[in-house]
Image: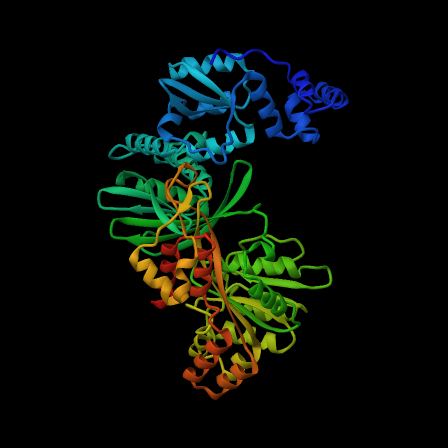
Amino acid sequence: MARPEKIRLGDMLVQQGLVTGDQLKVALDEQKRTGRKLGRVLVDSSFVTEEGISRGLARQLGAEFVDLKTYQIKPELVARLPETQARRLRALVLGERGGVLVVGMADPTDLAGFDDIARIVKADIDLAVVTESQLLATIDRVYSRTQEIHGLAKELTDDMGDLPGDFGNLLGLTAGAEDAPVVKLLNTVFEEALKMRASDIHVEPQEKSLLIRFRIDGVLRVQTEADSKISTALVLRLKLMSGLDISEKRLPQDGRFNIKLRNMPIDIRISTMPTQHGESVVMRLLAQNTGLLQLDKLHMPPHVLERFRHAINRPSGIVLVTGPTGSGKTTTLYAALNDLNSPEKKIITVEDPVEYRLPGLNQVQVHEKIDLSFSRVLRTALRQDPDIILLGEMRDQETAEIGMRAAMTGHLVLSTLHTNDALSTPIRLLDMGVPRYMVALSIQMVLAQRLLRVICENCAAPHVLLPHEHLWLKSELGDRVDQFQYKAGTGCSHCSNTGYQGRQAVYEVLEMTNALVEAANRGDPNEFMVAGREQMAGNTLRRDAVRLAVNGRTTVDEAMRISTQLDE
């Protein structure tokens, strides 16, 4: 395609009937007043959509409009235009046709930008039109900073040498800390982790290298390997940031610190542990301005949502959410609190740490070092006349008993417990030493959950069942197994070629009916388990995972993985 022509955006939109003359006049007046781009003013004024403008420009120029939400990006072609230039020019290399590169531009009327792109990629280019919001989101996703992280790690290694002379400068303790090698490296790691939706960062010293891994959608992925020499500098810097004892290397330590990335406050919980080759560090990333989910946005099956809502709206009793670490328990509980929060109710939370901030709540951070323990805070909370108490975790007999007594004296208590499924939860409390009558009378409901990876919508394709998958599904579905269409992700740039993007919970519910209360009081675990299975009637975590596989939300392999964990 030839070099694009200069276009008067307003005249083009009026000519194509996308805006009226009066709307254009209002937008031009606003543009003169604020100095913003005309296209942005038109979109913000709801006169036209961003996609409408892009499609109009494509028609005017005889160019292709590309929807980046579904477009399959090729990383090797994207790399032809460096990330810095891609952001500056609002452009992305999308494909190649006979030696000519197809480049998507958010502003195809930028003639100087068009010329710059051709000069940088050293090739003839064909123009395609994309929306700016999709372009920026795609740039964030496809430009991996792995090489930059590796380069910064090497720079830190070179600066350290064998025996660094100015360790304070390396750690960012002197003036110009933002330019210190370790600070630049950590900032880049944090930014990449946020961009890739990582929940945790693992910094692990090995015998001859330092391994940095991200946990994404519950699965660890290697981000980079560096010289083991920089391990000490990284750990010391992280300890300084979180207020830990830098002289103590023999004992585990826990702390937290806050940083700001892309104008987003991030709370980082840090855990250090001495290993054979140095201190291992794990950091949990918690975005503080992430909007709280509503209960009806958690994808609970209707019968589960109805029963859960009924339980949390009772005036007293305990509602427990169970599952392993990282199964979304806190998210579920805060969605419940979001539903219950009102000026008429006093809600107190006792947590370690406080993971979400919710206006209207009285939130307490446990601090064991100063004896601000769960049990101590909980006793005090009961004297604060609360209606609802969120107890972060029932981690010991004393805390569990105080929570049970609170539930039996007219308070609604929400809490978590680490158990494999709903049915084993009351048994676990009994094993902790909680009196049988407390367990039987205080628990209203147990909601067990797990997180499954969801198939990437951009590369989802029909999947033919493998023999072992067919056999497993037949044990759950019987002869109906062949009535459904199953899916799997083939892997694309949107999901880093994993076939999965995001996670969704599966659930099972156990309600303490009269029959279960009587079975619990009689103290026979087998009788309780039989009565519980009858009450749940097959509505289990495994069955919910099968439901998602049948509906094409997850793969059969992922449903089987969760089921294997339940059997362990």
